[in-house]
Image (tube, rainbow, N blue to C red; front, side, top):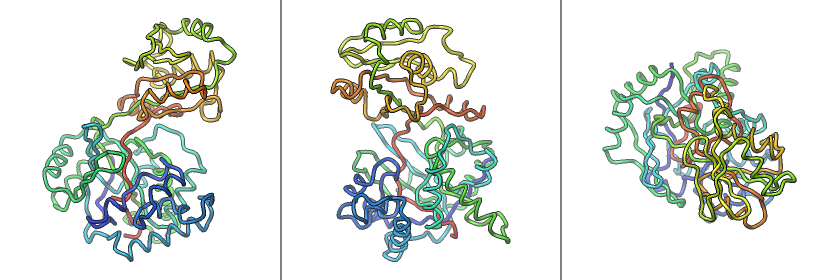
Length: 415
């Protein structure tokens, strides 16, 4: 059963929230962070991407960069830009994009739940990326950025969300990307106890986004437990910062592919080869979006095509085999285009659906790429089925938007 607890959040005073809050560390590069933080000493980028305080080109993994993160983190607290709550709270965090709002509960999630796989993952992690974030957690002794969880819908928690969000929020702002962010502090003790109890009825939490941050946070907590001879299991380091959303609130958007060449095939031959496994229909010059599972959108040579996988080319009873990313990876990218390793092959690139199918068209039309393939988005049910069966999704399968804003609340490991 999922074990969560309230915590004494470290947060910006209301008047500083828009200056402090930032995008997550891994959705922009150092130069983009430098530009976004320009003229703003309160930006969280000074803590999560502290290389911006050095000369351009400074290695973000240089020891002095990690030291700068700690220096800046301490300065933010001294300056009153981050202030710790006096009592333990849960929080509600709402995100609004394109008129749709999703509501998450901000919790301290349990390290042992991750180690014992009660927090389920659907992606592989890379040790180098884990180690980078582990250093950041260790050196700051805090989870500066939250991870993004989903949980099976729970009516009691939905009722709490409805009740809390009917009141005045602590923060309410629109970020520069146009997405809305609203945040409530839960201070009613009965409500806090109810949240803890309801999560105990939930068998599993699911990592939606942030596998590396989750692994890093849990592994540092586990390290601290092993190195403390007086460890009891109640210490704050046994928990890490997460925002947990009811699964029905979340929408996974498409994650598409662009390829540099047709592996020696002409366009005509390529289309002919596709007909073995797909019903191929010419759609013309207007952008065509996939209409359902197992339907794909292909853009090549100035035209859009609908590709519908033929019966018998996939197994609906196989949680991995039924995925459109598997069907396209096997029948198109591997069998026709000779791309066998999505993680390392330089002939392929990936485009998050937030950029729109026009981005695919642009990258083909400008000659950078030869063809583009758009996929119908994975569902939350598919993601949870895969995690439940202990399977791992193929690379570049899910894209969640909007991303969690960093800096709304921080979890200190020593309380």
